[in-house]
Amino acid sequence: MYEQVVENLCKVTDSTIQMQQELFKKWVSMWPTVPTSAAALTEHVQLQKKGLEIVGELVKKRTETLEALFDAGLRNIEEVFGLVKAKDAEEVRSKTFELLQKGVECLRQSSETQMHAFQNAAAKWTDLVTKGAA
Image (cartoon, rainbow, N blue to C red; front, side):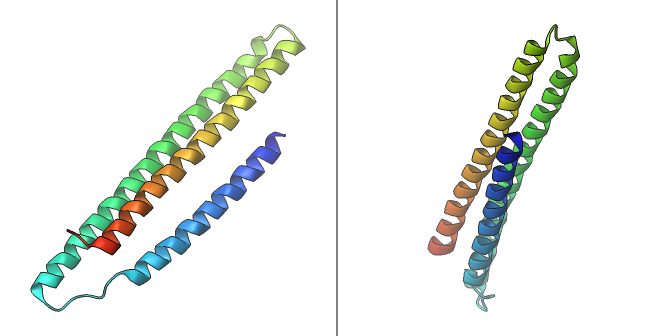
C-alpha cells in the first residue's frame, strides 16, 4: 500500500516538474528582446527584476516546504525507533499504521503546498508578462 502511494506521488511530482519546465520554456519564448531606447531598457530591467523576485519567492517557498518535509520525516524516524517500547504486536501494528498515515499526509500536504506556490508564481509571472512592469 505504501509503495503504491509513494509511486503515485512520484508520478505526480514528475508530471508537475514536466509542466513547470514546459511553462518556463513558453515564458522565456514570450520574453521581449533587449530594447534599444533608454525608456524601453529601463522597463525591460524592471520586468527582469520582478521576474527574478517571483522566481526567488518560488524557490524560497519550495525550500521551506522541503525543510518542513525533512523535519517531519526525522520526527517519524524518531517515532519508529520508539516502536521497540511497544508492549505487544497489536500496539506495533497500530503505531506503524499511524506513522504510515502521518507520512502520507505529510507528503500530500507538501505536494499541495508546492502546487499552490507554483500556481501563485505562474499567475504573477503571467500578469508580469502580459501587463508589463507597471
